[in-house]
Amino acid sequence: MCLAIPGEIVSVDENESFLRQGQVSFGGILKTVSLALVPEARVGQYVLIHAGVAIHIVDEVEAQKVFECLRELGELEASERRSP
Image (cartoon, rainbow, N blue to C red; front, top):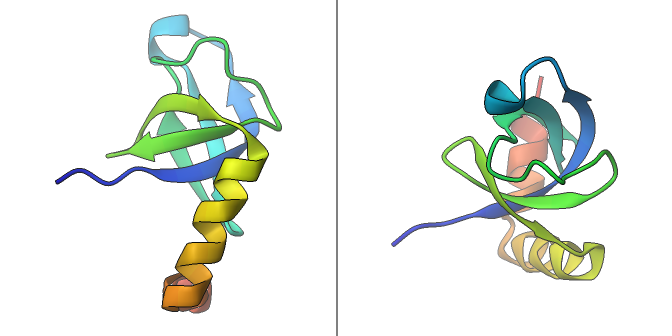
């Protein structure tokens, strides 16, 4: 089974389209991810991330639903406590 988690794009490095990367926030935790598969993705949009790669753009409402489910499971708060 594969799992993809939504995150909000907070910055994009536009240097090279094939290697396009961005900083994505997962409930406040920032990670660098590949945006090569979603070249139309922009700052402020939400994307589904799997194995460090953005695979699909999702709307904010859907992303917030996932965050709420993670909060209910206690997973989002646990991740927030582990952040530096």
